[in-house]
Length: 374
Image (cartoon, rainbow, N blue to C red; front, side, top):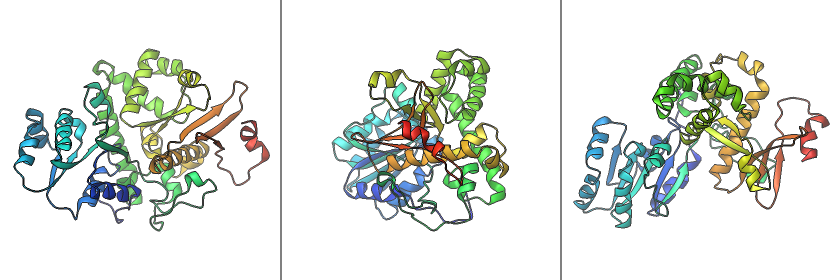
C-alpha cells in the first residue's frame, strides 16, 4: 500500500539483523500485511549474494512445487556464502525439507516468512526444530507508532521508536494498526480496511475451512468478530451460524492457526482445569475485527463501543509486548464462579500481575474489586 507517511521502524528489525549477522537462519510468522516482507528486505538491503524466492508469484511458486531440490543445485553452483529469502514459505511445504539440508550443510543462511502454520502442520511439513529461530511479527505496537507512555509494570515497559504523527490512539481503536492502513489518508482508511478484510481474511481464511461450510464459515466469522474479547458461547454461535458445536470449535482452530485470533486462557494453577476451561479470543487487530464485524468505520464507533475497543486494544498491546520481549510470561484472564473477574493476569511464573482495564476519567474503588478479590 502506498501512503503519505514514511515507513515505520519495527522493534524486530534489530533482532532480525543481529541474527542474520551471526549467521543464524530464521522463520518469521505473522498475519498478512503486517510488514514481514518489508522487514526482511530492510534488514538485507546492505547484504550481498541474496537469492529471493517470493512464492506469492505463481511462476516462482510453481517452479519449486515441481522441483524443490532446485534450490540445492543453485546454491551448489555458487562460490559465495548466500542468504536465501523465501517469502510466503507455507505455499510450498516441501521446501522445508530442502531448507533443512541447506542449513545442515551450511550452504546458506535462510530467512523464511509465512502467514499460516496450519497448512504446514496439516501436511506434516518440517518446521526445522533446532535449526531456525522462530519469530512473530504483529501489527504495530504503541511504541512503533510513537504512542507509548510510561509503564508502572517493568515487564511491559517499552520505548517509543518515533514521534507520533496524524494517526492517533483513537484512530487505532477504529482502524487498527496494520502498517499499510495507518499510512493511508484519513478518508481512505475505511475503504482499504474493508478491502483487506474481504479480499484477504474472508476469502483466504474461508479457504482453510471445509468447502461445504463456506457459507456457514462466513456467518461464523462475522459472529466471532462481534464476540471478540469474550469467552464465546459455543452453543449460541452454533445456532446462529447453522453448524454443530464441534464445527464451531474447528472454525476457531482455523482462526488460531492462521493467526487471525489471539487465544487467552484463564488463569488457573491446575493445568488440567486450564485445558478444560473456555478461553477468550481476541482478533489480532481492532481494525480487522471491526471490518469483519461489519461495524461502521467512523469516529462514532468509539463512543458506541468504547469499553470493548479499549479493552481489546490494551489486551493486544500486552500480548505483543510480551511476545516482542521474548519473555515466557503467559497472558491470561481470571474469573470465579461467583463472578469476580480480572481482565488480564500476567503470569510471570514466580508471580502474577493482575491488570484491570477501564476506559474512564474517574476510577473508583469498585472498579478495582476484581483485583482485590484476586
